[in-house]
Image (cartoon, rainbow over all chains, first blue to last red; front, side):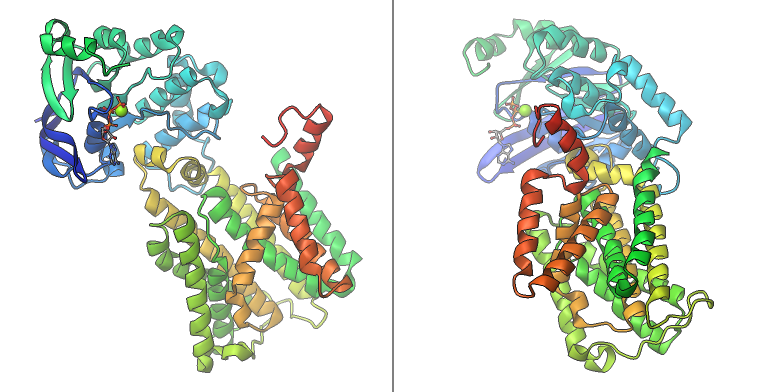
Length: 248
Length: 317
Ligand SMILES: Nc1ncnc2c1ncn2[C@@H]1O[C@H](COP(=O)(O)OP(=O)(O)OP(=O)(O)O)[C@@H](O)[C@H]1O
Ligand SMILES: [Mg+2]
């Protein structure tokens, strides 16, 4: 079977259950959104899938094989990549270097100690291509630390796509981005390769309804309900949840 | 090529010093050996961000290995350098398997522990290492079969300078290569590195092992040129001084390591000669001044001064 298959996934931190018996599928071409109040366990779920955290119980399969024992780096090399809720980049490196690094690693050249890091024509062309795609060309030689937060979010998206992932998890890609710039993020998501499996964790409902074709609602570590955007918009429980507070 | 300018200037400076201080060749050679050690620390700490205080362990391993190799196997200097590099790299790799799982204070404490264990072993194994008397009886053959070591230390100086140049060029090339970029990446953000599919652990072990090899070369040089290996090679003082030199000069730029070593060694030499009791005070004041006014090391002085002249808008940034 293709894609990601999560069964009975649970995670406890001491006495606190943050993920409880989650069943979840993500297939090539999917555009799923994971929504839920603060502290519902969305980031934890993404960290369990990407291998940053180890589940207390449950299984995670990718393309039919169990990846539960693989560490984060090994899962990335299989094609499962994510962006962080809080931008995580190489702040002292330039935008160009930030994009070059993942491509070098993807091409298994990271241990290379002969020749220059910027000496591979094909890789440099790919970097230029990504820069163009995200309209970052003018910032290519600036340090990431000197960019506006919205621009950094774009760099992180570009960097993650540079890995050519097959499963992409975006943890609140628009968080901290000024609303005048969210369209850049939405545009970038809409332009993602069609066969990529995409999971978007997001509080911004406009964004969710624009890009998601299925929505999963997580509350206190459990899946409350899931369905099409229309189903979810009409769901009484979800309306209760979002009108009854708990969300900012 | 602009980036080769500063190291070239330093090379010229070394030659000038050779002719300016002909009676201090042993001291100048000592500086060159320390430069190799501090360069190795710059790779490990400055580039890869591995905070260790045990670089002397790797230096000492290289020194004893090269010394013993010269006494018992073959007294060829260049072969001895390879043996020293191998010993330093091996110790770094083996200890790195444990050390590189840790960070911060734990890593610092463990790296100190490795060096003191080495010191204890060298102290106890008198029959092999000479214990507290040091390893004696090292008689080197001529370098490349051509240049015999002399009493004044001319050969020692040129030999050490050649090794410094080779190590510098190798590190400069490495820092521009994909591996160098990935080490900076690990320094910047291990989380992001893991998230692009890199085993941070093995990458850190790689950096530490290469650094160990270079520290081992420094130790081997010292053993061959001074014809003596003492327990001091493993001392905490040596690790700490190397770290101070690197911080003085500035991390992650290679020639910062060279500059820091030069300044430290000259100030040390001058202060100890003028006031054998209070020279530590002078060094301390110097370090404080640099850390306070030039947190990125002496190497950042030109840009810092430019900034000051332009109105000092971003002081300290
Ligand atoms: N390492 C940890 N140790 C203990 N508790 C944790 C840990 N990580 C997360 N938690 C707790 O797990 C719960 C879920 O956190 P998580 O970050 O997954 O929520 P979230 O849905 O992503 O929230 P947000 O919308 O604010 O990002 C929170 O109560 C949090 O305090
Ligand atoms: Mg979260």
